[in-house]
Amino acid sequence: MIVSSILDSTGGAITFGLVTAVAAIALVLVTSVSPPGALAKPGSGSATDIVDDRVAADLEERITSLVDAGADEDQVRRLVSRSIEYGRGGA
Image (cartoon, rainbow, N blue to C red; front, side, top):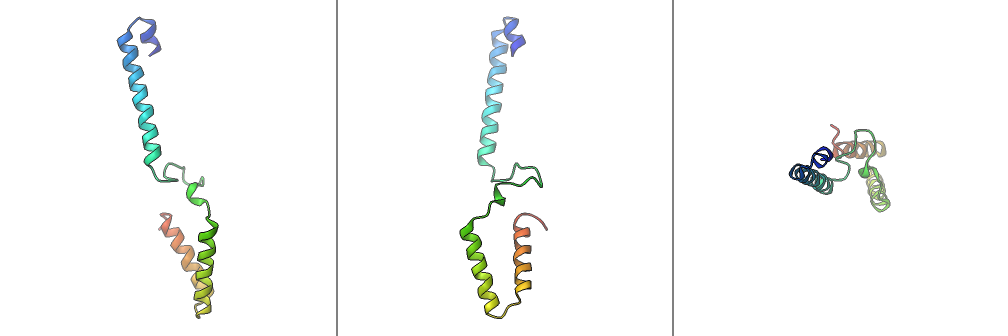
């Protein structure tokens, strides 16, 4: 774009400018429509790692009610951990 401008090629400079503008808009659109954490590097932590205290309290309450009903607490907690791992995409 700069070389085109220096060489007085306004058509080339405008073309490069428009291509750059379209690329910037495309990046903004891709970022806005992708789900949280989809563009993060693996293992770097993401927005999906944020714990909602209300959800955590509800989950703990449900685990407690299952244990009170006679379920083995270790097995229930392993099941919950495995479910979370599965939900995050780990098999």
